[in-house]
Image (tube, rainbow, N blue to C red; front, side, top):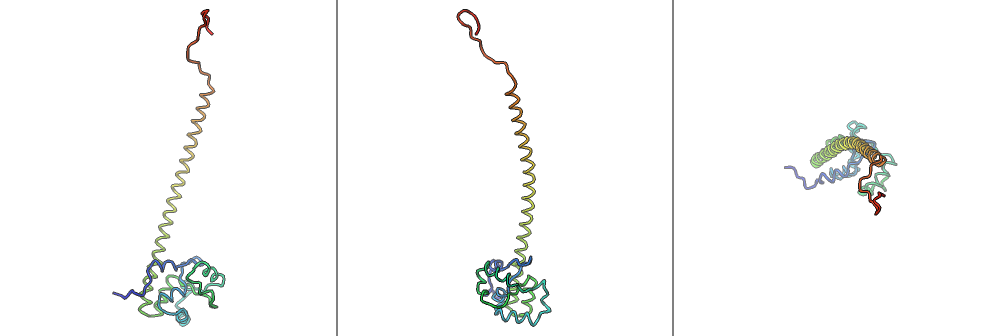
Amino acid sequence: MPDQQFLIPAEQVEQTILLIRGHRVMLDADLARLYGVTTGALNQAVKRNQERFPPDFMFTLTAEEKGEVITICYHLRQLKFSPALPKAFTEHGAVMLANVLKSRRAIQASIVVVRAFIHLRNLLTTNKKLALKLAEHDKRLGTHDTAIRSLFQTIRRLEKDDIRKKRRKIGFKVCNSSGHMS
């Protein structure tokens, strides 16, 4: 059984996955912490193996993106003082990075990272299905609302027609003392 005392729980890994440029990614600082190396060592390994990291595996954030990440992610506040722009790794880039680092810890941590990406993907799929079902119910309820509104309008029209019709009064006519009706 692998030694997992150093691993971060999958829930915490999921919290480090960001959506940048339409991709779910993890930043080099978070992966370095997970893989048990410094960010410098991680980026040096990437530099030595650039051919393994095409743009769909890894990209460098812009200064603006870095500023947004620092603002949004409290745990990355130390990046504010770094002159380097962080690297963002997709799920495939994170796995490739574990292969490049070749440590037992990196390999074990990459399994947790992949599971976190898969879990988030499944959640998004479930949420999309739920959103579609809600839209379908809204559409159905919308047609029900129209039918109910039409029904109430018809009832109100019938009530008005009834009120407008003159009805014969029902009751007794009172006779006065002379025998005449009043």
